[in-house]
Amino acid sequence: MIIGITGSFGSGKTTVAKMFAKLGAYTVDADKIYHSLIKPGKSCYKKIVGHFGKGILGRTGHVDRKKLGKIVFKDKAKLRILNELTHPEIIKEVKRIIRVGKGKAIVIEASLLIESSFYKQMDRIILVASDKEGQVKRIRESRGISAKEVLKRIRAQMPFKKKLVFADFIIDNSGSKTSTLNQVKEIWKQKGV
Image (cartoon, rainbow, N blue to C red):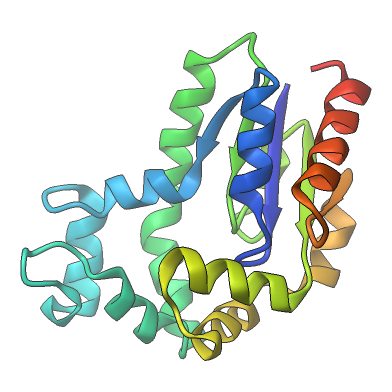
């Protein structure tokens, strides 16, 4: 069983994925794969620097994700280019992990699961919902990004309402962690994964 977890920026996808992991699922974080693929020497690094220039690099020569984010989240065409440069590599790596984990319940956490069309390879899709205030608070605390920047990134993604049609389950992450965990347990039980 392959379960895709998606939702807007800051909705709590990682929290939900960790809860599934505690129940026995093998979890894959597409963001972490992305981060590993943009390190110096990796193919995505070369493509990104080749397209966006060395101005996106930090002092150590690594891609400065904040600099890159400021460029792509204010211009949808540039965001689309970044996704075109990186999504095929990320999907290839996720597929490799899925092949290795055959027979296990695998949870794929990915912000752009639907936008990349990778959702088609999932057995079930879980959409994590949260109120905007919670999203902004979560991201400000975890990444130190301004509220204005968080909202810009949320607006750059597919609207939540459009994602609803792809969801088999919706987890409301606006309440307590206990409430979220209870929803996760219910899905885990229902699907017999």
